[in-house]
Image (tube, rainbow, N blue to C red; front, side, top):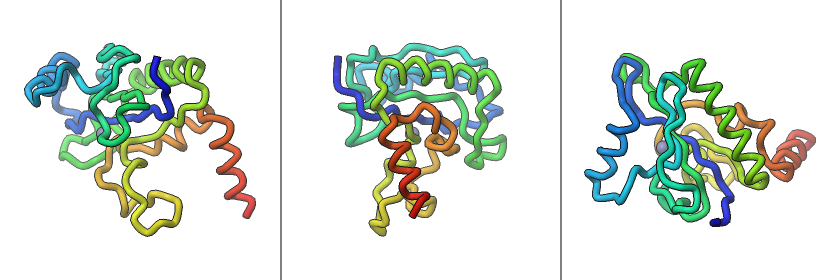
Length: 164
Ligand SMILES: [Zn+2]
């Protein structure tokens, strides 16, 4: 197995009014010349978890971070007008949490975060602020939502920050 330091969450960047199936996503990635879908898991609006690449395989979902990460994508991320928005359905939230709980057991030191949290920290303040996001993906605050599943040392670091 590879060393896993990050679990990166993505959205498909499609509207709630548009169906974007696992099959279609894989098809689009194959069209780009990739050998398979770029993600390890893809969660459709009905909450079904589709398995993409095997965990031991390097994914193609976040340039510069693929080697040591797992990529998970949920279908959606844009409202009906195309505005970035947390469109996770109840079923998707449940599946995502169950999946992350399982992965956290398997990789307890891996940090769970959103694609946008890996944008460059332009002003060097040690934090990637909203205006520094290269894109909105996954359109919600993964560090906050899954705080209880983050590795212990990350939680300690955050509480230290709060005490200052
Ligand atoms: Zn993404």
